[in-house]
Length: 95
Ligand SMILES: [Zn+2]
Image (cartoon, protein in one colour):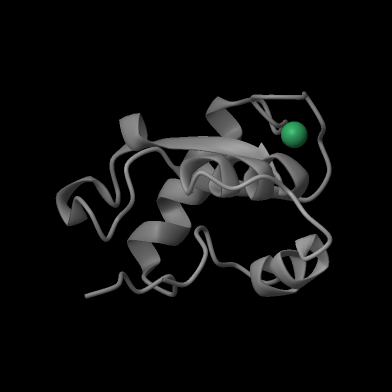
């Protein structure tokens, strides 16, 4: 069961996370294209989906790198495809 990223709670958590992290990527400090990343995936631990302790603000580039790293993959020429997948309000890649 995936989480619903249109959930109002997620919108609130996402906003709070970005505000907490100073509206910048926690890895590279970029203020552009900010997204909110689950440290433990919502699919893995649904109870933590809306936990502030389980989310960090990342820019799109770091988010992609982070997600690929979690999967044991490195960024590749397929990166653009990931960027396309990440467009919009999604916080994690579709499984
Ligand atoms: Zn970054």
